[in-house]
Image (cartoon, rainbow over all chains, first blue to last red; front, side):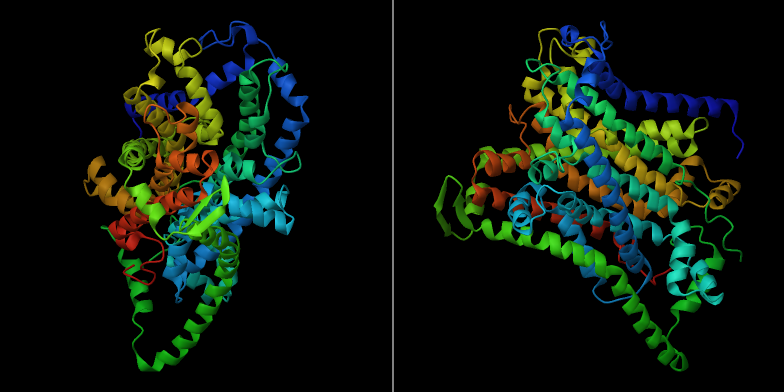
Length: 276
Length: 324
């Protein structure tokens, strides 16, 4: 498509506006994290007196450094498991005929809808009985479970838009259904798969309800839960600066993940795949 | 494919697959169907197993508690009281229905705004001319900020003396978060800023499914940009739109973190989840709290049902071998 100079300018301007809207509140957090405690409450958007004390403060606390490792490990494992299990089920739902499908789709959604705050109490008791309270696995299990409905729904919405002919063509060329799934459908479904992966990762990364209720020590406590236990750079200060600094640090992995994954969300993967 | 400009080649192949009535082919097909069913269940089994194992017990337990008088301050007083927790909740206009009204208001307004902004943002991310990765990452950034921290930064920004927004937009002596009709728009703003990227990302992935040649063909046929949007893009994106709307509405209806940090539910800004949290964790009244959870659950189920009926064949699990 030909893009005229005016259109180019219009899109460029739209890009800038969108980026600004998204970024300003984030920059506010960055600014808070660099403000010297004496100027923290001056209401200015920019720090007038800079300090890195907040960052040095949080990296000296095992509370934060352990939480960071826990967050990264738990989110990555939960995302991989959630997306793989979700992709398998979504493929069946989008492509195959079987009884009980509607029941499965409906009950997956029902599970996603139940308010998490009323589930943590029985889970707390059950987790302690099973001995997985305050462990990685104890958080990976609920994250995987409660993100499965979202991944099943998203993935099946994308799987069904992939041209049927390709699967049949693969079958004609001697591929088994499993091969057709892995070699043909998954690459074509990449935009959906990576979209889902981003959403599931952020779900695990941001959760505070399960993280607070199902952990008690640095053993498995993730950053959103650890923030609640923050103190200031010194014991007598408000933890505002530390919280802002922690928020900035834990946003960096998010940027990395999104940067890596978004490249796969592109149009035209199926263009010209089916020639009539 | 349910496209208005449906390509004939897709239809022809699909039709051949759908016509399954002929007797000579039936045996072979049932065998294939059986294999297909087996494969389907093998693929679904792990997900079903995990969901059943983890979710069923806490959900059933919460439902069971909702029929009990169970107050953690008087644990010995635990008895079966039927639906009386529910009647207590539903007859309290000042608490439940007030919170319900606030929740519905926040949900409707923020989801509508998010759908429009999300669609616009998805278009921009899709067509970004320079720095595509940077634009996409920036747009998705708000969703990546931990919710409680984002809410906290909004709260700080709107508090007189500490925040930039109050010095940009407010007068020095006003504290918008302490007035209901100013606090609710601020809550909606925080919610929209935080979760529009969720919508935008799902819609972006939906956009990537729209065949470029179809858009070009429509353009050649003289369709305006507006027609191309409604007649070509929206129909292909319908499943993605459904998923985005569905999960956003369900989440918005259960809004908790933002309100909890911004106003603590004061000035009648409580949502139903805030009310539920107060019952479960502050009042320690597990019976009433669980009943509220079940009610929230029932209302979200109603919303989900409405969406799935409304979208018909675009819903997951429908129309497998349908009119493609």
